[in-house]
Length: 379
Image (cartoon, rainbow, N blue to C red; front, side, top):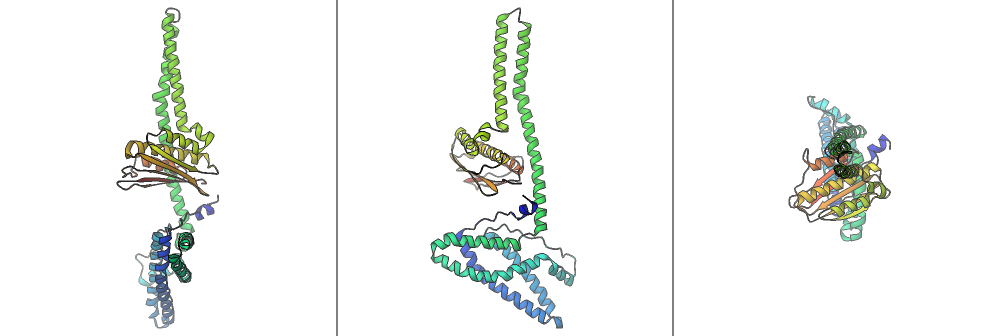
């Protein structure tokens, strides 16, 4: 995937039917008022510029265009769930009134706001009858209106969203933070493996060596003691093999590599002390790094649910889109979970960040808790 493709690839959700209908109905009045004020302001301002009175009118019209663009971003973000954040504009602090206006006039975001506001009214004229018809016709409200809202959200994002340079900067910042968190997560995993080896298998192997050394020194004098020492060494060797097998399973479980996420997550759910429903649909099979990340996110989340949530049942749902694997874990516990520095959920976020994934936690007091991981299949 090229850099340009990564920049353009933004997941814009399809809005809910009721919000789409309300958006189309209410927006028509705003669009009509905005269009009239902008056209009248430009016409009067340009027409009277020869006698200087037009310049204050043009300044006010420019400010109104920018203000309306910001309001449209918030309106589309709230109603259409379009990921529109406040844009960065050229700084005007410390400039005179005229230079401030000229800076705003040459700001590309001003002209993008203007372009959107000009095309918004004709679009609203088409959307208004669709919204009215959707109030009466249920099939249109359920299937047609959300797609119209989705198309409008894409248009709003292309004109009101960040430009290419801003998207590059945002992606660079996100990748830099993701790389740092990935390095920290890898270092923590290395320390965990080192600690498990030192405290577990290494101690067992030292005990095996000591038992065999003692058996060797008593080989001729006390055959019975030698037999007991060899039995002890044999038991320690089996325990060391078992601990090494568990450690290897913790790095990459064999069932995941052999049979995929569905079987691996079902095996995890079967070991959970609470009832867990598992639903997995990830065809075609995602890359191994994505599978491993999803597997450990589910495993650690189920462990935390069993220990801390007070839940009696949980659900795991994993599905795939064209470019993402989405993991969603829910429980009926008491809620109140949040991402804290150094906490378990922060560890999940760090693990997801190693492949540029994102963890979202919704856990109001009283529950239910929903933990969602969006894991890209291409990076």
